[in-house]
Image (cartoon, rainbow, N blue to C red; front, side, top):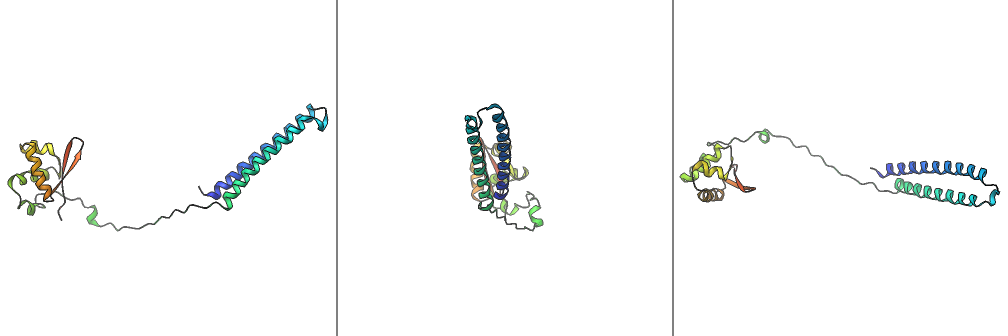
Length: 173
């Protein structure tokens, strides 16, 4: 909230407190005047002025806080900068994973590496390493070594997901 608005709200609360002090003082004065037969020398009159002064003091303190916030409270400046980005058709176009896209890279691979890469392409570019071992029939260690070589060539990336690895095809280019 802005400090000026908070200051105005605090002064409004102080006005309500002032009204309550005034009404309380008036009611207490009526009670003391009917109950006390000694006049102004009665000790009740002394407590009445003490309570009134304390109430007015609290109200003035709250008014001073409100005035300080209105006149001296610094506003926080929030700086926002908007920049429009022109969307290009290339950004929203989903990348298709196909053997044609990776044909040039597959020409340099060995038979086992090609087999693994083809399985990843068939799985739309993402597959668990354990599924690769099952679908190719290779032992897990062999799949790991082949994936190490494919990672070194920049074709795939392994990401840890809990207790298993997800093999993701890297985009070419």
